[in-house]
Amino acid sequence: MSKLVVHTEEKKSKINRNLYGNFSEHLGRCIYNGVYVGENSEIPNVNGMRCDVVEALKAIQLPVLRWPGGCFADEYHWKDGIGPKESRKKMINTHWGGVVEDNSFGTHEFLELCRQIGCEPYINGNVGSGTVQEMSEWMEYMTFDGVSPMASLRAENGHPAPWKVKYFGVGNENWGCGGNMRPSYYADLYRRFQTYVRDYGENRVFRIACGPSTDDYAWTEEVMRIAGRYMNGLSLHYYTSPGTWEKKNSATNFSRADYYETLKKALYMEELITKHLEIMSRFDPEHKVGLIVDEWGTWYEVEPGTNPGFLYQQNTMRDAMVAAATLNIFNAHSDRVVMANIAQLVNVLQSVILTEGDKMVLTPTYHVFDLYKHHHDATLLHSWLETEEIGDEQNRIPNLSVSASEDAEGVVHITLANLSPDTAYPIDCTLTGRANAAARARILTGAMDAYNDFDHAEDVCIEDFDALTVENGALTFTIPACSVMEITVS
Ligand code: AHR
Image (cartoon, rainbow, N blue to C red; front, top):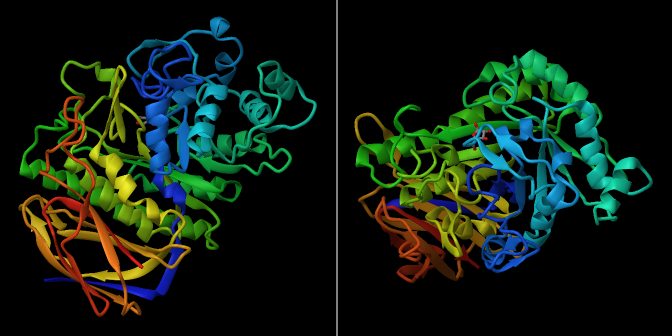
């Protein structure tokens, strides 16, 4: 019997809802066909946005969406994506498949998408191939409420009222696809570019600097040293990619050893966050700068027969376990990690949604975001979980992962994942101070390689879990192998 104790009187940090954010890039079929089909499409849409996708994202209460990249951001020129669609400039998407980008989805369309979903926009500006003026004018175009060249241009293009845009990234992966810069050079550029990303009226910009890849602690150190006092957030990118970069795993056809390797690599997020935060603290002892994990998730070989530049991959229960364990790590660090954006929204990498023509599939990862949605803006509770090591010789991982929070109504939500692909565990869960509690639970469970596709859209989905006993504040149940549970205690 594994013990879990949730100390309901030991309240910790507020879990920022933005930890449950997502990322949408002009990459493969994420934007085009994924979220945007155009006003004239036969696929049901509102102003060009797919109704099915928007409804699904509303259901998980998507809080924030990053756009337009990724690597695409540092070759994106926003003025090419405004005005009459027939006269918008066409460009080559050099990073992702060399396809023609017709710019029919631009600033107005992205902000309309966010309006329909009800989420905050997070816009990533171009440092690599852009200018200070271009970045400055983008913010003026979107948010200035008055008489100015950019505000007039916005009105000419059909949107006289300004939008609210809080989150703005100054460059993406500038150590790589965003210009191959050295940290000191980027840090100076960051200082310069961000100066002209103005706060207009009541719009207060939360400025996000390009942070490290994975364990590039030298980047964090140098950028924080030179530019730390000019930023509100520093981004971290980390992908879980079992195998080697040249020969990655298949998304669906993998062994138990691959499974353990994947989970082990995903759990490395804990060490990365801890070490980057330690460095950030040296330059920012008052913790004014938040860590933003604005790209994370699994990265496998593309599905056979698909364009290698489109990064289209299936999504199994293995991905659900990666998502569950990672989100529990983010919750645990919610005092300093203030946003995270899984890559990516639709049809790219660890997507929450897949589409094909007018069909849509919700992935196991989507269902994890559904199970975790009650953590949004809730208060993290101290919890203690007895775990044991499982895995093979190369990769040892804990069998269980948990987080617990209390929402504004005093309801406790526990998200518990059993990372073992084959063993169920009996759990004895105590909630201190909740002697007369009532509990209910939902579960996502399946074989480690189970997934949904367009012919079997609901092979993996959330079910009610009734096999739970409550007595004197203690819950007992058995968590099946390879499953994620949400337990609600009121
Ligand atoms: O998410 C795919 C790519 O991964 C992004 O464009 C880039 O920022 C990262 O390397």
